[in-house]
Length: 586
Ligand code: GDG
Image: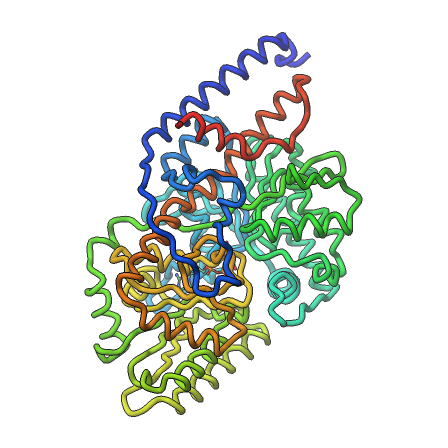
């Protein structure tokens, strides 16, 4: 007989009910401290047919009150302590948050250019968890201990990074091959044909098994919360579930999910769906991607889909499929201690720009989904239509090198160089280059400076799960100026309705929106930017993580009730926790 069974069920119920009340009261106390902000007038987006009228969260039934809650690291800690006490948190991603590389001056520390890392790093720091990732840096081995651990961030250690070593063959097949030549183009529908090779699939399976081993080795309890990140690990949730059946596995898919017709071309579609359904919760940025996933499961697996409850029952277990729009950490005072004018002067000096030009910027990994060539074509149209702007606008494109050994990425780089040379030849003159392409990695400080120096920021992705650059630009503008031009095909366009929304496939149309952005009166810029900042500040990355953890807590509570013989409707769990919090606050 286990000690548990010595307790009468009634006592269990009483304890559970009491702990639920205590937790909710604790949360309510946190939220009572949160600020309520005055609403600001809303502009309609520039191309109304491409833009939603309500923000995605509002459509999902989140109340306006919830949108104004101020999510913070403290609140996240509070949720963990009160809702998920003594729970260990394990994050798994391919990319590590800190990379050690041999450089000219010894070992250098790098933070990779990755939306996933930007979002998850502050969360893992806050939760003091364990982060498992591929150790890909040339100095990673010598900076790790004999358990392959290193404490990070190096200057203020807050959590453990566990590095997993991959052979050259594994890296090529799993990462470059199946993940980036197969799943990445498959999910982005960016007209780059996905490549599916049986040998890559073998590696992908083997590496997923290797990471499952690492999770089991690192888990100190039988019921951790494991946060599985992204398309590199579609099989991992099932592999963890088989060995840690009581774990709460939250998988977040950072890129779009295509419709079932597109998904059907993947030769291993059933295995991928089966792997993901090992998750307790599967998250996407926007509802459309959830719908596409559910449709794919409905079509290819024997399962029961509960569309209203956003849940899939398969193989005796249930997976919740929900949207959690990712975001950024709202910047600290550092940004505010300096004026925008100072940042602008520094950037203009660094790039040798004439003080009277307007500056537009683009910042991303050099990736064919980001629509870099498309914005250059739009610039070409713009200069063609508005020749009085020749000499008065500079477009500064930061393109961090990415996946540079793959042919599609090499071809893109060459096309960018050729197109920039062509446009600069056409519109440039002595001392004036309309496009400045900087194909280099930059640090976060430099990027913040750039965002603050710019008159316009262009995000013209052909397809993007969310896009954090759009939110980073908005967050950097405490002067409430600057214009965001944003693709209708980036998940961020569902939230950032006051941006100028564009269709990146329409070069002429996008060129006209550039004109609109460059001639927008300051008052209108301020009205739009103020509203955008409200949205990003309220829907920050702590809310993203907090919503998932609250859903996980609710799941765990439901499981406990069910084990005690309560009614079992495991999927009807998600929103009520947040809604209860709101109700308590009211
Ligand atoms: C995936 C999804 C989703 C850029 N250049 C440098 C640099 N960056 C940083 C940016 C930003 C991040 O990288 C890029 O984030 P995105 O969201 O724009 O794009 P992906 O990397 O494709 O991210 C995307 C995201 O996951 C999160 O879920 O939004 O849809 O595709 O933070 O500032 N960072 C540094 N140097 C650079 O040169 N340090």
